[in-house]
Amino acid sequence: QVQLVESGGDSVQAGGSLRLSCAASGKSLKNYCLGWFRQAPGKAREGVATVDSGSSTNYADSVKGRFTISKDNAKNTLYLQMNSLKPEDTAMYYCAAAPQWVCLLDSLKGDFAYWGRGTQVTVSS
View 1: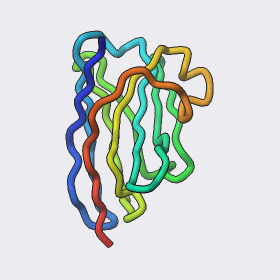
View 2: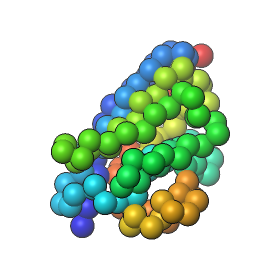
View 3: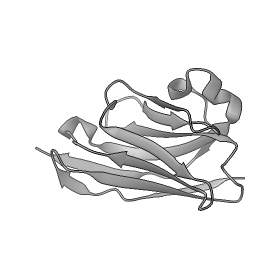
């Protein structure tokens, strides 16, 4: 099994930046489809960004130009750099992993098998 642990969530002002990390253990993530998702209270889960084994990325329209997903295979860690944060970015953020083929489809709506427990991001206006 793959264990995922998020960190880096915080409370920031609008326009600020945060970098989220997702540390994996149990298996190497280098050949997985990886993603960040978020969910605010009373809202549906939203796919934010994904990256595949070849480092090809996919972003939700709402975060394009502001967020960057990346990974460090040597550290077995996934990252989400978030810039120009807006109050509507406030949510619990989760990292997730899935078989590589998921990234060949609409990965932001993919059925990811492994999930972390989340890290809270709060953006104040």
